[in-house]
Amino acid sequence: MSRRNLLAAALIAPLLLLVTLSFLLPLGATLYRAVDDSEFSTALPRTASLLRAWDGQGLPPEEAFASLVAELRQAQQDQAAGGVLARLNFEETGLRSLLLQASRASARLSAPVKDSLIALNPRWGEPELWRLFKRATGPWTSLYLLRSLDMRPTDQGVARAAGGDAVFLPLFWRTFEISLVTTLICALLAYPVAFTLSVLPQGWANAGMMLVLIPFWTSILVRTTAWFIILQREGPINALLMAMDIVDQPMAMIFTRFAVYLAMVHVLLPFAILPLYGVMKGIKPDYMRAAASLGAPGWRRFLRIYLPLTMPGVAAGSLMVFMLSVGFYITPALVGGSGDQMVSYFIAFFTNTSVNWGMAAALATLLMVMTGLLVVAARLLVPGFRSGGVKV
Image (cartoon, rainbow, N blue to C red):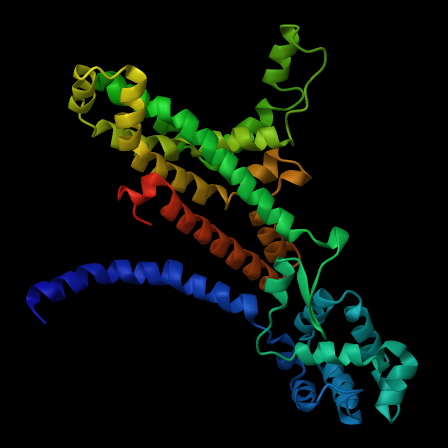
């Protein structure tokens, strides 16, 4: 290898290491955690081995009943049963109580353990329960990904969640709806702002750019908290509206979808303005003058020349805004209502509150996949992406 190639490799190595540590490894860990199913086999290894050997017909042998009770009692004593109890209870509510009941009664159970357990609770005599345990022996599971799509595994295959249990597909739709509307609003607002900055004298353009960048440099939490104060019933906007006799009583603006859009657009608007400004600044005025000399009216010059030339900037800004929008957590959590929360809110809930890492990883994985598919669709369908101005 030549000295130049060695130098290039040495210069690229830190960047490659950074990308690996900050992106590839967390991404791989997330994908792994979304399908990992090791809790049962870790806490109850002998029972898991017996259930894997069981053909799933009728009830498992007496040895599996005895092993489950013994290992469950030992796991409780070692404080190692929390993971498997949470895992099983997530798949079917009530299993945690059933297993804890068996663990507490283990000292009183007599041989055969199968009959004693069934006498303790008839559920132990249901083959479906033991087939559920068999599915939980891992090492992989589709449970979390299916739940994230409002489905669940059963003995017959996959079943859809019914009625009020179907919450995650509407959640994904709400996330993409809010993100797309925010992106559209940012694009519409950013276009005239970027155009104005691109045609102003340099001194005024620098001053205008500072006004764009100062909010950009301010913490998202600070800006969102400011909107929380401004939009309250006793806030300055309601006070002004009532002082001007526009409304008779304070309007409900906080904890609404309107507040979410307003705060998100305020946070993300600079990400749409900056790429557009860069593209518009590079467009030579000769093109517009040439069209004017040929008799094209202003609206035709804009539609046929200026707008297509700026589409790469529109596409780049829209992509940045959309990609940031789908992962928003703080803004909807502070200023939105219960019906305005996005996928990131539930990822945080499963991570910090219920400590269900598998579900959090599954939601994150599906969000990443769905976002990637939308970006690919934009790459194929939107002129600004196809023109070569934006590489995805």
